[in-house]
Image 1 (cartoon, rainbow, N blue to C red):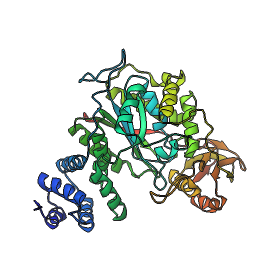
Image 2 (cartoon, rainbow, N blue to C red):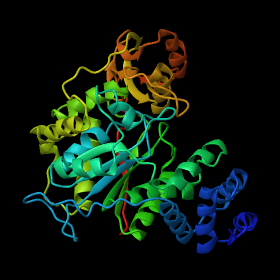
Image 3 (cartoon, rainbow, N blue to C red):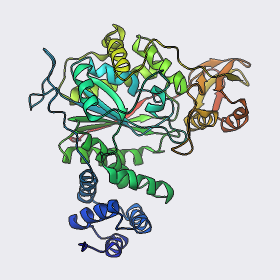
Image 4 (spheres, rainbow, N blue to C red):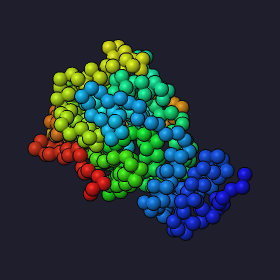
Length: 443
């Protein structure tokens, strides 16, 4: 077929700091998906975008073109619950959450069933971990029998019956993004904010959710290391959502320290169940409740008390139904690592820092994560923390326990943890603000 544009001309436009036209953007995404634009040509364009940026209009069009490369889901057939909220189309409202990834970030697990308590459907399409950041699907797959892959029909049926689903995104959603993501990963262009934002939002908009809350992580264990970068990414994604008709809000949250007391797979499920049972670490509970409040408000629910729904067992009831609906046994024993090794405090004092990146790398090296997408993870591997910033410790007391099925991994994990914990004299204080900022359309 005759092509409307030439890839070299498109590259030159952005190389020379020009704005890509809507026609150029539509064509280059479609042609790359079809294989007409070569990998090296798209790599050059990605680098030009990284160096020269894109306008809001360009990013919106780029995102729309990626959405157009595949299917769009439709939840308008979901019937509202008796006495529950109804959206403008007479259907059950839908809301979703996306985290940019971190260490110990198991928030999706208690959050999805918690929001569903209030008659709002939560179609949570999640991914697997890569490198030091954990993957929600890897965690849930440590539950015997649970399956991540659902058809669109199964997903809709579960949303109608249970109100929440956590599953893998189907291959039909924004296939251009899947191809672009792999290319960015090997060409040094992952950090381009227009490409990050369009990658995340193309899938979320194609998913068809009515509202979306973004958890943009900031700190050593996050993709964005400083607040300015994170705020720019959050603002870009909020604008993209708004332009596409999706009510979108972003929270900037701290990821300098791991969330909770576990980083792994099965041990994070265990901790999530503790939260659903009304307990669990304070920071996990705080962020779960705050995100639930944001999701419910975005979906039009104003009088909810998510903290109460954690305490009284309603969220746990939805969790058990959600896990069972996907073939899992919520009562089954979770996998336990065969080997463990404990790291002890070297001195008396107060823990003032615990580096999230170092803990995440250690968990990865113990087998909880993967270096390549095809790698297999260990369900029981990870790091169990005994002291977080603010805790008073004595020399010789446990700081953390390393877990793995393959003890030869301990040495490299301990190398990753060198300097991870900073202990200061008693009386020292540790900063612990979890939510750093909120970004919304009206700001």
